[in-house]
Image 1 (tube, protein in one colour):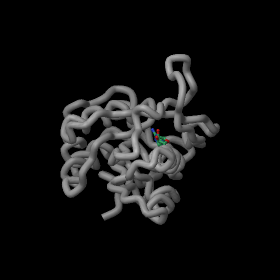
Image 2 (image 1 turned 45 degrees about the vertical axis):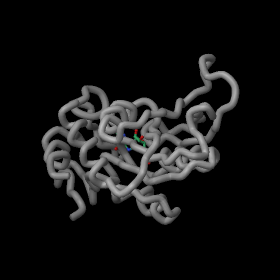
Image 3 (image 1 turned 135 degrees about the vertical axis):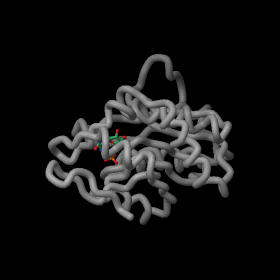
Image 4 (image 1 turned 90 degrees about the vertical axis):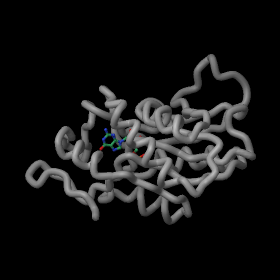
Length: 191
Ligand code: 5GP
């Protein structure tokens, strides 16, 4: 998606440890006009699929998922990263190792919001090592629901997640795939 690639080139900041900061338009301040274009693109790429629910993970996936959901006209469920008092009763759980924070946390979704008849599209901001995506895919599997695929805004193609998740049989549509990035040459995209 050229608009997104141009924006990453213009405003993305490369940080130590293979981290791309996109805080000015995606992860902190959010460019809702761009989110609208991202949502439309996800809808186009998954036009052949029936989707009944979008699943994401807090926090940075939520904004993107909500805007995209307007094009799919389905509810958004976000996996919570910690058990909180306002989630009562039965939950699906998983463990995810955070790429950016380097620790393992629990993710949960209440069983009432993920049903066996659901056709789930996962949406997230980044795909790096694939832990977040595989954790979300496990929740879908545990619910007995169908996983339609995953829509990712930025895939870091030089990390293993994309290959890993695709090898597990999940359809992944990434709007920008980074082939390499470093301070000297900047961001280089695949294609
Ligand atoms: P994974 O589980 O695939 O290793 O990493 C995915 C999650 O880590 C995403 O939900 C995202 O929040 C975060 N993440 C991974 N790499 C980056 C990065 O380069 N920049 C930012 N801002 N977040 C990242």
